[in-house]
Structures are given as C-alpha cells and as structure tokens.
Image (cartoon, rainbow, N blue to C red; front, top):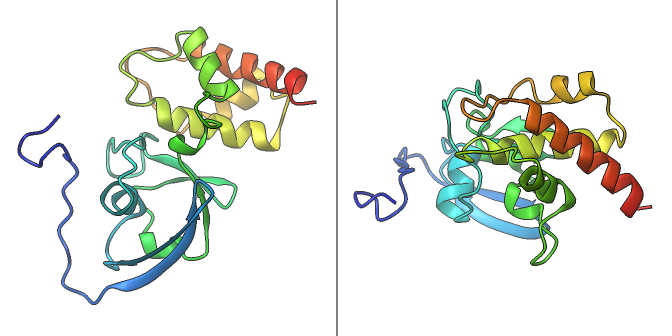
Length: 176
C-alpha cells in the first residue's frame, strides 16, 4: 500500500487534451466514460474502473503482467490506448471468477502452487484463459507458446504449465 498516492501507486497525469467518450464492456458490464485520449487501457482499468487486478510490470508490453483479453485476444494493456477499446469486450482477471467462486483455472493455479509473489499471475491467467477458450486440449508446447509473453521471476514455469494442463482437463470433464 502506497501512502504517497493514497493506496493507488499508479498515478496518471492528464494530458490536457479534451476528453473523449469511451464505450465498452468490461467483465460483462457496460462502461461509458469520458477519458483522456492519451490514457492507456491499463490506466483506464486502474484509474477509472478501480480494477487493480491487472498489474503493470515493465510498462513497455514486454513482461505480460498487464495482459487482458480484448475481443477474445490477449493484449498488453500498458501499450494499448483506452480509446482503442471503443466498443470492445474486455475481460480482466476480476472477470474470471464466477460469482464468489474462483474459476477452475484459478483453482488449479492455487492447487499447483503456480504463483509465489503473484505479481505475474493475473497476466498468466489471462493468457491461459485465452488459450483454453480457443483450444480445450492444448499440448505442453501450445501452453508454452501461449505463455511465452508472460514472464515470472519467482515461481518458474513448471507449476504454471501443470496448472493449465489440469484446468484444461477439468474444464473438459466438468463443462461438458
């Protein structure tokens, strides 16, 4: 928790340009906001919607910590402008749970200890979710390729890959 920014360490400086409308769906809810045209999608999620699950790592689209799903594809929200999300359907880590119950994928990440500090976990989950949405039975190679843009510096990738495999299997069995 940051005292300097009242708990929000992700400070955004308004450009001074006229705000523009942004209409999209985030985690199944319609969103209509006026936004600074220079604001990134990550800043929009944090500052306007108070969704702090998505993390900022490198701020350059290299580490994958800020990965979300936009219109069915993963994107690095730190390098996408919020206004590019006009009419988009966005899924963040907050949208993975079903009500008060964690998704199968989230449950398997916990079961397989596929996290330590947890900073990279939201991005990993979103990349894995996008993979499982288009391929319900991915090979280990396909899992590695899907997670190639997400870096973890403390857990290692074996537990993460095992968690994705287990989630794929459970989803195939339970969601028939």
